[in-house]
Length: 502
Image 1 (cartoon, rainbow, N blue to C red):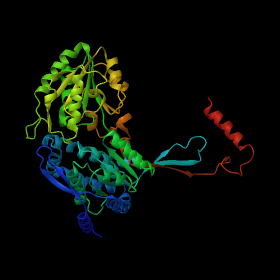
Image 2 (cartoon, rainbow, N blue to C red):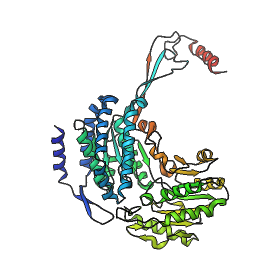
Image 3 (spheres, helix red, strand yellow):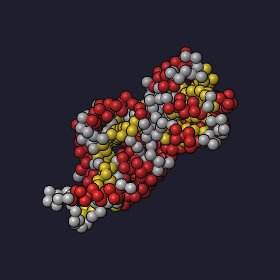
Image 4 (cartoon, rainbow, N blue to C red):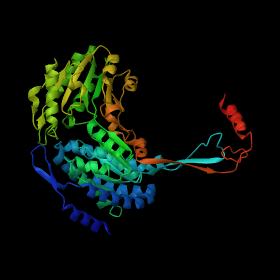
């Protein structure tokens, strides 16, 4: 069956499903209608992806690179078109959408250019006891990878799994967020246009039940990005069939400002990290711990910058709406809790919540057990806390169940402080820079999840290591045989004592 015919069959089959609408959160306007795929539909797409994966794997690294490069060039050519879809479904400003897609393209290029170097067969030392063996390890594709994506960065975040999984030789079945299905559809259709002869990138759309069906569909691995609570449910579902999972959940990222920091740069980073994308960034800055010696100056700089920002749906807005309407109540509750517990609202406050928009909010001196400190807010809010020294700052930054990203501003101790932080990534004297470096692994610890996307670790995340030994020549002392002469093991013990006992 040709790709066109197969696509027509899927379109006809989709007509029997109930549908849901994607909405522009800025206006409430319907921007798309998509099928709610049931378990049977999900299984059929996984089966089709599996059928196509064999030929994709057989292309080898260079063959796949050729096709993925074609896709990358198409993404570059039509960047504005995809950016418009991202804006329509998330409400974020056009420039922010374009910045997201720049990262998508750069990561795709890195994955395809480095897959062979990272995953190809390589020799390893057989050691003393197995010196008659040639030992190799290579990383083989799992088969079909299910990717469940988020809505806040609907292209960049899932592509951290999709691009790396495809480069490693897998097929991918993608379930985008129900808030951004159009972005997922655009990505899948653009791949089919660029690589029509290899239908290894498939789409399923719907709500949580569709994602649950993907976990139960026979995929060989699942990569999930979303809340910690949902991540636990994904893990439980996959555990029934021992399906490995990669889980990237939320964060409560901290920024530490030392006494010797460049305060202007730190304040600029804090405001961008907290307010860009309306604060809807898993690695965004939510807490700042600033050395008492510079706390007043830093807070003034942050306040001046934050007070100038305005949300909105028009092109000139600094950031857009809260994409997921239910998140507004969480943001409001965290602001209320912080103020009721004694926090000082130095920018904005309770009245800053004007659905679907939230104006910038900066609160100082909040109790450390407030929900504004302990729970992910996911809005344009920032809590600024003064500390007596950076040792206290590190202790408070680490006193969280999350451990995704972090930021340090310090001229003398940046690297030292970074190493002491319990987080998957740290930016020193910048903010969120690690996400833009394709070679760096991305992921967290604790309630922020486990596993890594991006970099060599991200490529290996979507491949299974296979170790192989091959006998080069027979050895006179073979302990792994019932026919071994008496004294063989005793001789082997002597050898190991001589070789490893010193």
